[in-house]
Structures are given as C-alpha cells and as structure tokens.
Length: 124
Image (cartoon, rainbow, N blue to C red; front, side):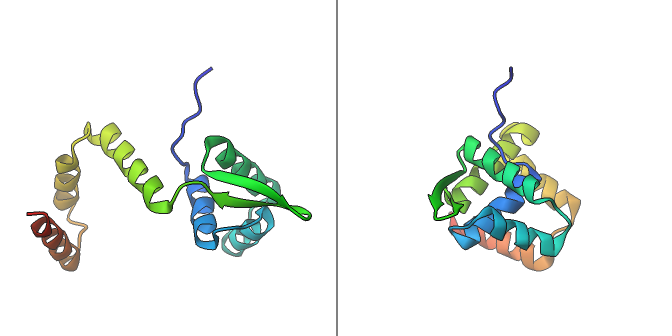
C-alpha cells in the first residue's frame, strides 16, 4: 500500500483556510461556511477534516457535545511546503525556471512585476 500523500488537495486546502482563519472550529461551522459557497454534504466535510487530522494538519479535542479542531501548523509554513513541493515536482527544484515561466506567461500585471523587482532588489 502506498503511503498517504501529505500535500493538501483542493478540498483540504479550502477547509484549512477556514480553520486557519477561525483558529478553533467545529465540523458544523466549517460546513455552514462552505454551504454558503456551494452545495456540500456535512459528512463530506467531516471526512475531509478527519483526513486532515490523520495527515497531521489538524488536531481535535472534545468540547461538550462536539469535536473542536485546531490547525497544528501555521498557514505560512504549510504554503511554503506546498510551493517547495510544486517547484521540486514541476520545475525540478528550480525557482528560476518557475519565475521565468511566470514572466513568459505574461499574466503578471505591471504592479506585480514592480513588486517582484523590488523583492529581488531587497535581497541584494
């Protein structure tokens, strides 16, 4: 059996963004917020949150009648890991190739290009 992939799927990331913002939450609260955006089953949210707990992204504790979930890692740490994994997988670890691809794609606005240049100049 293959080991479980530790990176976040799109539904997992969507739920993690809610949990990071709320800091402590229940399945019900996440479900209700997701339901405002799209149709989703309560059991689906519960299953995804259990998977996130198994992957080590969430921890739970029982509070009166419901489980309360909290993130185990800060958002910036998780995103940094996801970006690194993406660069490693798609660009063979080359951040330069990623930036070159973004620049060649020309989907960056002038203000985004200025900000990138500012950030590059800041490191020198």
